[in-house]
Amino acid sequence: MVEHAEQDDELGSESIKAIAESVGVKDLNGDCTAYLAKQALLQARTILRDALKYKLMTHSVELTTDHMERANKRPVPIYASTGQKPRKYCMATSRGREIYGAQDEEVDLDTILSAPPPKVPQDVQVKVHWLTIEGSTPTIPDNPPMEDDKLVIDAPVVSIDNVEAVNSVAPHEISREQQLYFKELTTKCISNEKQVRDEAVHSLSTDPGLAAVLPRLTVFIIEGIRVGLGDCKMYYIQYMLEMLDNLLQNKAIRLEKFLHDIIPSVISCMVCTQICGRPLEQDHWSVRGFASRILAGLVRSHNLGTNQIQSRVIKMLHHALDKQNSGLVSTFGVLAGLCELGSLTISTIVLPEIRNIYRRVELKCATSQDPIDRHAKERIKELLVRKCAHVVQEHLPELLSVDDYEQKFGDIGREMFYKVMRPTSHMPMMK
Image 1: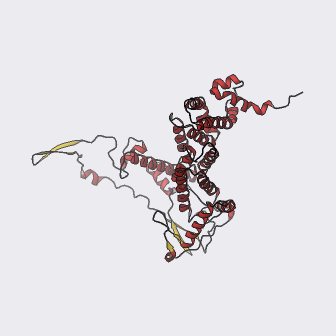
Image 2: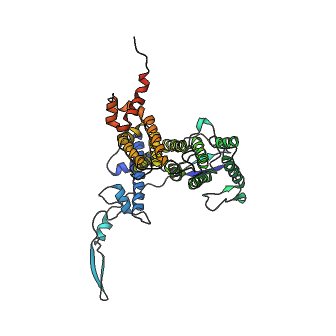
Image 3: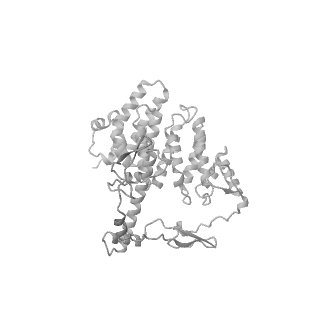
């Protein structure tokens, strides 16, 4: 049997009570302390995340108290830092040279020695519990809940002598058997035989033992997308997207640690100017739409209040949509991604700009000699009408005629009107 110790990253009720008593608040009940602990942890994570952003923006090597103060947005300095007060300097002479140094205030030691000592801080609490007992995870509140009350049996422990790295880029080591499994799995996922490829790709959505090779699988998918985009091999990009889609459906694994690499690769499949060798003959529009649906699935399944993935992805796509020099193919990919993120995104981002978007598309198509731009214009028009019709019907019921739609949406208003009114135009008349 193996015993593990795990340190709780949340504030305990005793810490909250001690902090409350230090500011004069007493007799807090259990629900109040639990709520305060949750809110304090959320605020601490938010301040730390903002401080790391300030560190990156200022190109600092280490995280300092100045970054914490700016993230905290409080005028009161913390951790004995200087805060917003300007530093004072004084001049001193040394061997005929003028030296300027910080002027420190004189401190009365008697005042410090006579002051009462501060309270002893709370000690770190470590709680020990069993994670695994003879290959089974006990169902106790300290362990994560199991899906469908089924206990997942861990893989057998592999001896260190049988472990060797696949390459130096790998984030961790795996056993020889896992290396062979990874090689066979990836080979079948890109096989030319459809039945073999479908079986291997489908196993990604059901196999609970992929956690050990998941870092290598994500690297394989990301590098495969990069190679496919560079060589304009659309079929290879589609293979990688199918693997990623099935990984997203697997409930036994989590992709949070790899989202910073996965999301940019998926967005590249949506907005890249050319992903195939013959764009007029090959259906690359469906591949872009497939990538947009995968992006929406990643956002819906991993969006939290702390990481704010949805707002960051929407901001990125909205910024790309506002670019005047972007191609129509890239505009189609951006609109497909925004429309797949839900009705709220369409009503707040797409609908207010649909008139200007389509006007810019028509102007770009009129000044371009590339036949792919004319094809992209029709695809954008069909996408906007198909995705926005039900949102217009729900959020803009005051639009009743063709003139109202044309005044609101411009040249695309007539098609939008017919799309919205089509369900009601074929209803039988009441006698």
